[in-house]
Length: 183
Image 1 (tube, one colour):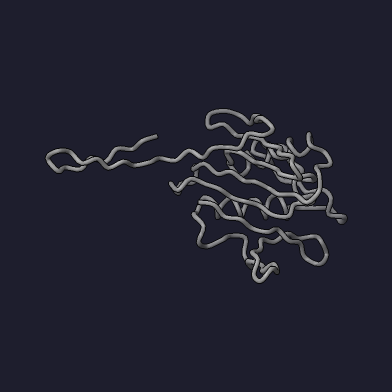
Image 2 (image 1 turned 45 degrees about the horizontal axis):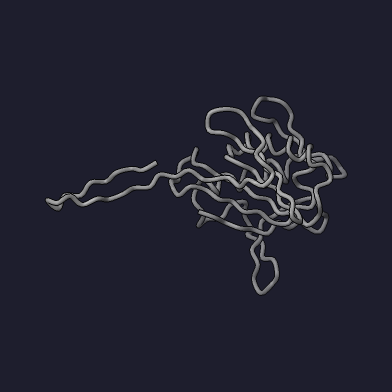
């Protein structure tokens, strides 16, 4: 399943919203979830907009923080900066731990790529993402959360692969069907 959204800010530039385009203009979803997306994407959408983009901030809206998975404070300064849209991709097997990849699109070059990657590690842990990508004008930054261990960096030009089960139905000569899960 794949869902693309524009990310817009309110007039005060202090709150982020998901939007889709209609006749070339952004149309706010009016919610932090997309009802026709699978549950894995809905969960990631809600957590991302509330815990990362719209988390607690100071008066100048430059310091966003939240408790990371390891109990430390995680700040989000680079992730929200200049973000314009996002793509959530997930496995069709709709379970809470199904693979999910988030790609963020930016309209400016990354100011602090190393800081972006550190924040991306925290986002991967919070959202249980397989991978988080940031794209800006020919640059791809990427951080991956392996299935068994901690967060690692991927090659700068390596897109993630979503793991999903495929079921094959084979017909036997006696017309019996056999269903096999292929992983």
